[in-house]
Structure formats: structure tokens, C-alpha cells
Length: 436
Ligand SMILES: *Cc1c(COP(=O)(O)O)cnc(C)c1O
Image 1 (cartoon, helix red, strand yellow):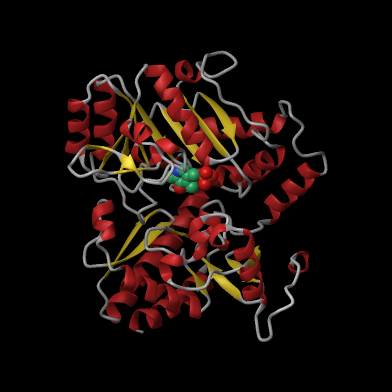
Image 2: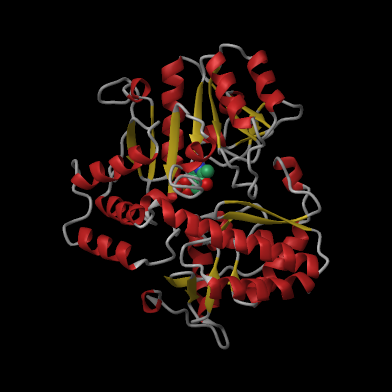
């Protein structure tokens, strides 16, 4: 792996990580293929990883880190789980993209539908971004309406309609959240605070008959972990039903993460459409969207909503997904919950011992250590947390070989490979890092 990257002629005293990072900077904007990998939010040099194994990752200099990034979610079994590796190897030996229906698609779909019965029909895509974008197109077609309501700080991939930020006011028409997103697109996205029932109702009062869908991460996990307050998801279900709008759950993170039936199973809410990704592909490129049969029947070739993909339902992604879900019977979630709860308890105790104002928020194996006295309920509160303190804590942990997600606003992903030894190492490091 190391030797596939050409070595630059420079570099007296340079480490391999530094060499690769320099070469990456010459090839990619910011040296990365996805922005968070640049570590800008924590002011450190990015890591260059060459190998993952269980709860650990190794960088290009051979340094081993205990990992809480978990590939940004998919690695719920830990990295390179033997059963998943074997399944992918086996599938690869029979060819990659064959460009036709493959039995593995049916098998993964039946597992998804058994776990989330609301997904009566579904489509596999190659990323969560594509799946969310397609779900919105479908919602617009199904309702004959244009507007989507999303929550401030929520991430649904990088399709234009979702790269929209809150304007001023409580329930506002959005403003472009990225250069290159037109104001016309942003006008059709309404951004409201997460956990704010009144703001959602107000949006519907102002635009009755124009809102196609509300899309929500049922547990917000891209502003740090922010659980829904009691009654919030129920309210979304009621208000969308009352206005003939659709409710879309973006379970790209929460699906197969917060429990065997995702957040919809955990909270007992049935959305009209669901978006999946990450775990369902076992670490391979994947997304999926699905839901009510009548709505999904609008998708081509049976219906008028076009959506396609050369690599959709890719046999290697299907194989990795199936092998991963096979390793996740309900009792393993109980184990994951126990380990994660213990981690939460110990982190709180370590922070208290170090006299740090920290709150730890956790839903299943998703966890955020907030630097601030109160745990945020929405994006505005999350932004008010002490990010400089988080950056120092991140650096302290990295120096002790614990790799946290490099932003206050990303969840820690605990895996089934995190056991007693890993918890102990994390807590020892955290106790020191909180004090420093
Ligand atoms: C990661 C993520 C996406 C986008 O998935 P990609 O595969 O990165 O395109 C969408 N929604 C949520 C909630 C995510 O966390």
C-alpha cells in the first residue's frame, strides 16, 4: 500500500505521513477528497491512514491509533471484519459491475425491508447524497409541490437543495449554503431549528400547499449528537400528515446504528420515505432510498421520476452490506449499547474529576463530548459550545493515540470491536487530556 504512492525527491527528516500529505495537497483541493479529512476545525495536520483492523487504524508511519471515526459510520463491526473481507473477496472473484440485476441486491433489500418495514420498495444508489437527492425529487413528484423543510445543521449530502442555510427569523426561506447554489434553489428550501415544533408548524402555516416534504435526521448527528426531544418526531409525523406532505427520515447514520430497526424502530415513527447509506454498505460505496409502495412506484421505469446509476446495486457493496448485517443480530446491539453506556459514564466521571464543564450526549453507539455546561438541542446551541476547548481535547487525545472525529460537530462512532481494553485506553487518555 505504502509503495503505490511515488515518493517526492524532497524530505530530509520528513515522515511518510508528511510526504503523502504534501503530494495530496498537490493533487486535491485542500489535500483531501472530502473536506473534514483536512482537520482544519482542530488545527492539526491531517492523518494519512493505510490500514484498519478492528478498533484500530494505522498511519503511513506505522503509528497505531484507537479509532472513533469508524469510516464516518460504516465500521460498526470494526475495520476489516474477517466475514466482510471474505464476502467481498468472494464477490470480487466473480466480477464487479455486471450491469444487470444480481441476486445479492435482492438479498440485501430483503434484509433492509425486514428491518424497516416502512421501506416497501427501495432503490440502491452509490452514495447517501444520491439517495437523499432522489428521495426529494420523488417527494416533489408525488406531491406536486416544490418546497422542502430541513433543519439547521442537518446534513443530507451535498445536493444543491440541501446546501442551504437558515436565514434570519424562526422559520425562514433558506439562503445558499455554498457558493454555486442558486438563490432559486435556496428559495425552495425552508430551514428551521431542530427540535423546534412551533417553527415547523409556522413553516406549514406560511406555505400551506407548497411543502412537499420534511426531511430530518431523526437523531441529529452532523451537529454533534443531538437527540430529538420527546414529541418532536411525533409532531413531524402529525404535521406532515395533516398537510399531505411527506416525512423523509435520513437514516444514513442512524440506520442499523441506533438499533436493528434504525431510529424509526427506536422511536416508533413510520416515515413515508427513508434514506440509508454507510452501514448498509459495510464500508463500500452505497446509498438507498425507499418507502411507501405507492410513492416508490413513481420511479422509472414504472413511473415518471427518473433515477439511475451505473454502479447502483454493485455486487461488492451488496456483499459487504449483507455480511455486515449478518453480524448484527439484535443481541449485538445490546452489547454495543453496554459498551457505549460505559464509555459515556467513564467520560463524564473523568471530566468531573478534571473539573471540566463537559456534557456527554449519547444515542446508542453515537456519542458527542460537548464542551459547555448544557447539551445543545439545536445547531445554534451547538455553535455556541467551546470549540477551542474541543480542539485542545482532540489534540490531547491524538497525542495519546486516540483518533476522534476532527470536529466538535461529528459523532464518535463506537464499534463492536471496542472492548474493555479500548475503553480503558480511551478513559486513561481522556482523563489526562481533560486535565491538560
Ligand atoms: C453521510 C451522510 C449523508 C451523505 O452520504 P454520502 O454517502 O457521504 O453521500 C447523508 N445524510 C447523512 C445523515 C449523512 O450522515
